[in-house]
Length: 345
Image (cartoon, rainbow, N blue to C red; front, side, top):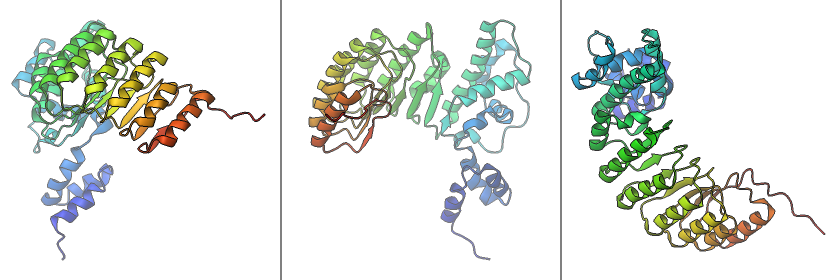
């Protein structure tokens, strides 16, 4: 019998990483295969976070401090032996499916408080305990989707000291929590040395929020990707953002799509692109002729997303003229711009 080198097994099983059924069957063949396959199976659970069995396994991994968050709600934790593998060590990404899984588990266990506030507190307590556990045990954790539970002291402490997470998505945050969350985020940005990507899509930042965020980013030298699309950002906010871009040397990806930026804001942003030498991707909902002029001289942007910009024919012609002089752009999205056809006379 020919014994394959270990590296070959890794290549074979990694090619099957989304074929969960076959991978699971292979894991039962022998111990060697099992040790290789288990980390692959648990690397990116995706929608499997909704599975009640996974939630039970995660709850078995809580330490005393994390369990204490559940005591006020009289939640009975599973009393099975701890898993043979430290599964959470292998997880690289925690998305919103985890929160659906928590909701499903609470419904299954018939934890159903009558008042919405109590129900929300109950859900958040379980979410906080699990996220804290992932931050403590997740040696390979890279991506994390969070809501207002980031304000929880235990989560903040773990996130503040974390050295593995490189990407955070703050989702579904509203009301007073929006400002509390921003304060927590600023502290993390000032301390964290690994966070390179921040997604604040639909965060609905106002001017003070943008100003607070930028003050933190002035001191941050690690973050290279920022998503601010669908934030109701107007000219006032984008002018502050343009000023930030003048001197920033770390940000390479900036998404400002689906905001309220008009021609004045587009001009301010275009001026910033003359001087910025690091930005390589820009998503924008306005810009017009000013942006076209900036592209004539900008030498770093390689990807530009101008979808839904209402450029129309004249804007399209100005952009086309600019692209004749630009030598760096390799990707351009002009979908839904009503460019039309030039009439012949």
